[in-house]
Image (cartoon, rainbow, N blue to C red; front, side, top):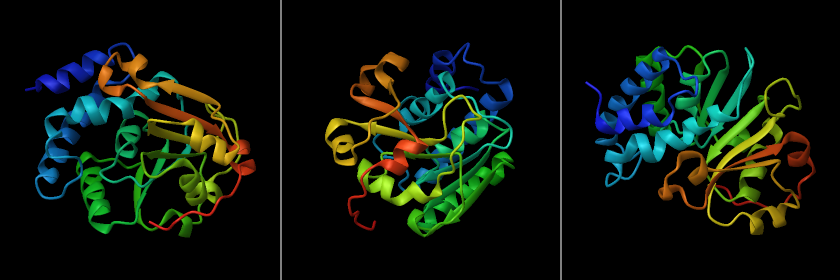
Length: 228
């Protein structure tokens, strides 16, 4: 039986092309996230009742502008509980996802959920992004650090290209002020997607998904960044 929050999530994305099979996995994922959250704090325990609407919905919002070709490679850096990586792996089964975090117990959770959902397009890795060496079409991150730090972590992971609906680069979920951090980088986003407008929910006021083209990431200033 669907929970009210899950039903509202499905209704919010009606007509966005998410398959019934994907929704079945997303519903199962929510149950697993709640089970694990009772043991490991993946999201605030005060907010777990809003898991679908506050955490899944902004991850799924990418389906409104992103299309991935078969074999596209995506690294989700600082994945935590698998946000957005696990959700993206479900809705883009044709792409390959590497979920990276330096905290082993969180990767253990993500690995368990991916295996129980049968996600064959997911691999996990306990590593700092700056110590990783593979190349990807996109690097994603959700409120991992400020943008100059994140660019420093992931710059070398990006491979140029333009075979998907967006040019290869960074797709980053960020709240609050953008200009101070982009000024520090000398780099503007190619696209800014306003989550409040996309989802029709004031909870997402001043919360965005940013897309930076690979070339702009490479040309950005290289301020020093602190290790996590």
